[in-house]
Amino acid sequence: MKSQSEDVTNNNNDGKSKKSIPPYMKAISGSFGGIVEACCLQPIDVIKTRLQLDRTGNYKGIIHCGATVCRTEGVPALWKGLTPFATHLTLKYALRMGSNAVLQSGFKDSETGKISNHGRLLSGFGAGVLEALVIVTPFEVVKIRLQQQKGLSTELLKYKGPIHCARTIIREEGLRGLWSGAAPTVMRNGTNQAAMFTAKNAFDVVLWKKHEGDGKVLLPWQSMISGFLAGTAGPVCTGPFDVVKTRLMAQSRGGNLKYTGMIHAIKTIYAEEGLRALWKGLLPRLMRIPPGQAIMWTVADQLAGLYERRYIVNAPCR
Image (cartoon, rainbow, N blue to C red; front, side, top):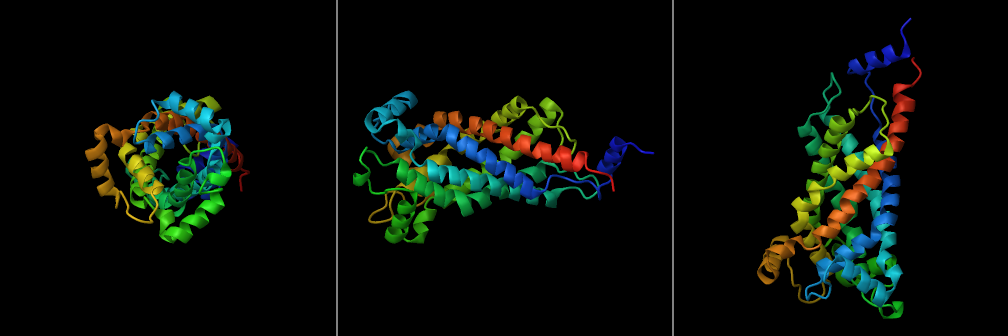
């Protein structure tokens, strides 16, 4: 009689019977990771946005910006835009993880069930483009409009909350106003996810000998390290896209627009503020994105790993 481990091995060697974590489970695990990440890292995102929108040098750096916001607007101001940010991250990670799993299935070898790095890159880029167009752009437009408002009195603010902000944008600028800055967002997210999914898999294999389908659940600290390392390359490579995205999203479409598009914005920022301005907010991005990926992957890996071990590796033989 064959042991259960032998059956698992045979199933893994049989391309047709090899199973993997279903996309819906990847989506669920990602969404839970997004909720935890949003609550922990929202203050850094607020500081990043304020620094990117600071054209006159009001803020001297990360600490000065955070201290100024707390002193003039109160500590809760560091969590401005949390509702759209948390909702946005939850939906974004669900779509990102689920769509990436679906796209990867199309690149898997029919016999071995393995996927090449080329396939991972394309799947990640496709997932990034999809999330940018469907979720990221409209949510970040609302988030940035809320974050750029300064003051303690809600009555004096133009936008009273996320729903009011979205309605105001649609009324004053049309539905297209919610998709301001879509082009740089697509470039940023597509590039980020192509690098992130490929790097995360590589770090899991190299550091922890973890392969999908092997039933091994990474320890939380292992997921943190892999996720943190995978999240470092994107911000450096996509800094200009992120700055341009923020500038385009922050400007209202009513009246004369300072920036008419992605290329025009890059040229204008370079001419008026210098090359370094295209990487404004890089340090807070590096303080937010790698830790954010560490948090998200810690939660996602635990949920996905438990599913894998229970329903795939240790599933009853039929």
